[in-house]
Length: 417
Ligand SMILES: Cc1cc2nc3c(=O)[nH]c(=O)nc-3n(C[C@H](O)[C@H](O)[C@H](O)COP(=O)(O)OP(=O)(O)OC[C@H]3O[C@@H](n4cnc5c(N)ncnc54)[C@H](O)[C@@H]3O)c2cc1C
Image (cartoon, rainbow, N blue to C red; front, side):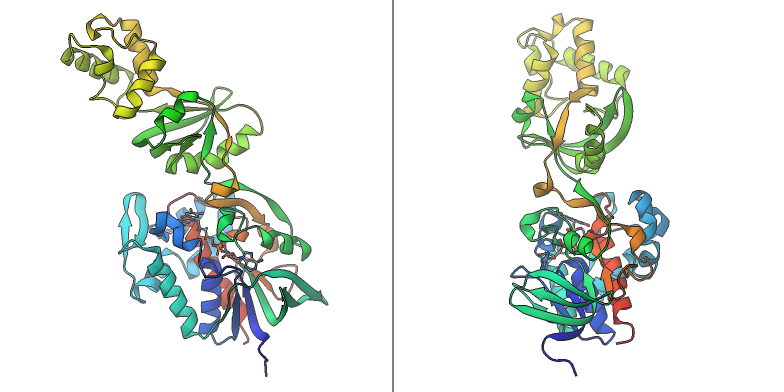
């Protein structure tokens, strides 16, 4: 008979991975405690997808899904086979939350509210009678004979047969993900691949960027160069901020930028008109100049560009703003076209963990069994979610990783209980 402090399974961290692990384990009959240091469960989950929660990606081909996580993605193969995007959509739909597919195959709850997703999980935990300890910070794990014997909270000890660590990474620490899990993992003998920010806004050195703060550009192309060699290219949406650039295509490139910056300077080349090649864009500019005949250059770009970027382009073109378009030389026009196709930005660094969406690095995958999420070092220990050395692009991939690994960890830890 287990007392109030003794459980079959202790899950540490009440984020997406922890909630899924705890829910699945009780569904299979285990007595589970879920320990969370915040005053609520799923604090970060509530702000995902700008509060709308892009909870998975419309990609049912497991191989293609895993490829998005780079080389480490192979680790996810069996977890996705058991509980992939299709199963996750069914999981929420069968509990009353329909999903909708948006641009780029991103999947959101139909009513566009992350709270709907959290409510389903809370109900799932309540149905299984999971003991939820809020405002409960885990400080330490105790080991005996190669097994974890207890977990220490401030002022309380919890005993369990199995322990699942789902304490998240270091990204957005204001939501509770302060990297505590990495320290425990190391103390318990695991290797932790140095965590660095991923899906992070990028700082740039150009002063004019500030003038564009708040400007969002759709359907643009961004290329990343180092030593004249193209390293990455993305097409889609980006945003100018007071310190540099952000938005999906920048965030998805940020890990690459961070790594390359350690080796030397890099350049970003923004193509504002990727649908037109140089020749076609030049023709288009000539047509616009024809249309604005007799008018000043500064008033001739309205058809081509968003209003707020026009003064910046004019300044960078070095063409006299009051010059009549009729007198703009071919050379000047070429320079303008080049600016529109190859606007240069110089990254100086990433904004850091505080504004990072996900963590790159974490518990080394070679020390975790991909079929069970069980530790290969400690018999009664499991990991799930962002704490693992896995990170995908934006688009619902990262939450899917949490659902899949959480589900598998919960299932494996519950075995025999
Ligand atoms: C702004 C933002 C938007 C995002 N949008 C999306 C999106 O739309 N789609 C997507 O797929 N991904 C998105 N993500 C990423 C996604 O939120 C994470 O991948 C996911 O939350 C990780 O889940 P997790 O359960 O592993 O960790 P977390 O969600 O970080 O949960 C870990 C929990 O552990 C708790 N904890 C930590 N230390 C302790 C301790 N010592 N004691 C007790 N509890 C502890 C924390 O308080 C936290 O609640 C977004 C992230 C951010 C920051």
